[in-house]
Amino acid sequence: MQRYFPQGIATDSSFCNREKERVALKNSIEMHEHIVLVAPRRYGKTSLITQVLKENDCSGTHIDFFFALTQAEVSKTITEGISKIISTLLPKTRSAATRLIDSIIALNPKLTFNLLGQKLEISTKQTTEKSISELLLALDHFADKTKKSCVVVFDEFQQIGELKENHAVEAAIRHAVERSQHVSYIFCGSKRHLLNEMFSDKSRPLYHLCDLMTVDRIESSCYHDFLNKMAKAKWKKLLNNDAINEIIHLTENHPYYVNALCRRLWRHDDITTISDVRNTWHDYVSQQSIWIANDLSNLTLNRRKVITGLAYEPTNEPQGQAFSIKVGLNPSGIKKCLVDLQKLDMIYLNKNGYYCVLDPAVAYFIRQHSLIF
Ligand SMILES: Nc1ncnc2c1ncn2[C@@H]1O[C@H](COP(=O)(O)OP(=O)(O)O)[C@@H](O)[C@H]1O
Ligand SMILES: [Mg+2]
Image (cartoon, rainbow, N blue to C red; front, side, top):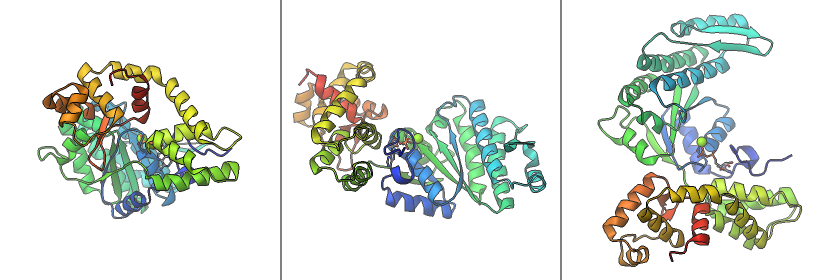
């Protein structure tokens, strides 16, 4: 069965657009330049990277620090990721693989063979920071020996900045990244302010190590064509423009929500109409309402007033009189809430300078339930 709108990573025919980002990322990988890729959760960072690696036939490893809360866990996560990529770069014959393994002898490689193929285990005897450098440098060395370049993706990288020993770990990573000639690094993350501190504060080890790339929402015109392509694949006809516009309007071009809504719409035998779109979105948000209400109830009253104001109407003058009167707070109180809500990833400043609620389901829920305005 064709997966039109996946819940997880989107690639190939379910991948929409991102032309500019795909070219930029491909060029950086080819030049062995390193990138910091920043976007809120569920905007499509992993999908974009996966698609680029796939279409350019690049070897890569995805190392996710989401669950790495201590330095030891970071080191373990990196060890697993590096052993995985080295395994995929290894030649398939036992003798050639064994010969190459000698070039990473410092990592105590153990290569085992079974019916499913070969499996590599590595470990280092160094202290944690040294072992991180050693692992990453060994990968570069290995890539050199095999004459294959590769990509290391560090996901949820801001987590490193939250460690007690963040300076030492960041310095170890910089040491290896700067010396790597065959490995490109993509530092990916969803907390913009934390990543900003890590890469643009002069006192931090990773200062100016990479170029910054941001991933935005997908443009309406791209979704227009994409949704019609998917409608043709499913129903053999184009969607009514009103239905498409309503999908884009309700989901606010947020890739995760476009997929969540369309996945439901595309289950039907009959082509989607504007009222299907409205009803399905309403039911979907209702199903999420316990979680949304919980997130909102964790906010202070002032933050809730500000997010409610923005859910009704995004503003480019949040400290202006109109918004101040609307939410019943003075400009300095509003400013503080805006900073806090941005850090919590609940609001964002869009390209046109308007503050908006980040999650379209939260915005819709507030408009449905709020009695404040
Ligand atoms: N370019 C795209 N085309 C179609 N769907 C996408 C695209 N990018 C992301 N998605 C969808 O959005 C959701 C979040 O994508 P994901 O790559 O996991 O985001 P992130 O890594 O930023 O959290 C998934 O449902 C995915 O299928
Ligand atoms: Mg991701």
